[in-house]
Image (tube, rainbow over all chains, first blue to last red; front, side, top):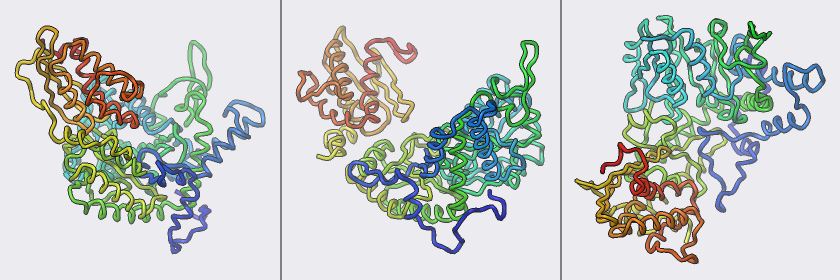
Length: 421
Length: 151
């Protein structure tokens, strides 16, 4: 994350986590829904933005807007400096060795599609295997299926147990020379499981197999150090991290990125173009065709500043306490079944209630001002494994409170009243 | 009445708990599956037609309370009706849940189906209420995937 001595944090480890002060940084949290204060428990879908992020985007369009890496004029230089500065913030946030290992994309979905298409085109062929866990998000399944269809490669599924944990023994047995990549989600958006990615990477590397980590849910909740993990690729999205939508990151080790062909072709990713031959730009630009979401990237930089200031280790500890409290309170209600009960969990409480469909739960909770997600969470294979079409999912961020968990419990009680169970 | 109570009225909850005509027809004239991939609601409608008449209609499937109750109430209301009458009900029901027809002021044939009018206040749930009706419509039109329709 932040190199030693670079943290601007005024916090010391001993001061209590001041959630009331943090809530004041998020203007949307003052919203009233149907006459009640908003209880926003859907941060796994998208987190809310602190004022500092809104201001950074606003400032860019108000005072700095120009295209990057092109102009010689003042505004273009300002925009380029801000944009490149944000890339360095991402580099430090992930503790990547080089800033050119940070590819700016539109989000995890594009990041994974980039790897599946570019790495896949060069290194994955007929008969090769792609290993994915049973709990992957559709965005870490479908790009690989499309690749498999094109190339004749095979997607194989790493099994999980009834708590929603990867079966490491089975995984180890599946690793073989035909496996050309492993894709694993660090924190499951549907189950909350924190996967032992470091161990999984080490096992894969013993056989020379690269690993892509989907960090969409992990980056906002854990300190991520890509060099310590030794992952080959790491993807996350800005909007789950309190940053803007439409911007995301692909980290890749230099050696892989150098060896991979471009993904999208266009401006900015070339050095020279003629109809006879085009020479591609160096990293990271080789993978960044066209005008990027400049304001979004700058907003992401501001979000990273904010998280650094708040400190992810304190965020993780606070959220763990909140999740433990919610698990105990909601889990104690009769007729509730928790979906995903891994020993290591973060941020997500997925549940079903006997004979009540999650969409009915979601609608009634909304009437009580409690915003949750009801559905399959783009993880249908995981839903099928647990034998449910969908779940109700409350997800927590560091701006949520125990009082909001209590509001959730009251609202669930109301659901049961309506359905008379 | 609160919006929650407006939507989840006793009649609706009752149809959800004890859906009417909730069975497979052994030899249907037509059979049509409907699926809402967004929420996973799935149902199959079985029709026994006699000329222009819906002699019998049943359904099977799983889904939320709104989709199940709506399907149940639909079977009750179209059984014994002509195809043209069922199409009229489909059109009026669709307009009602989309908020384009106010059953209290506009003339209509909806009868007890107006109990589902509350769904218009819940845009995300309109699809749940109309899934069964769209499935019936497709079955009557005979337009959808022929693999799903047995004649």
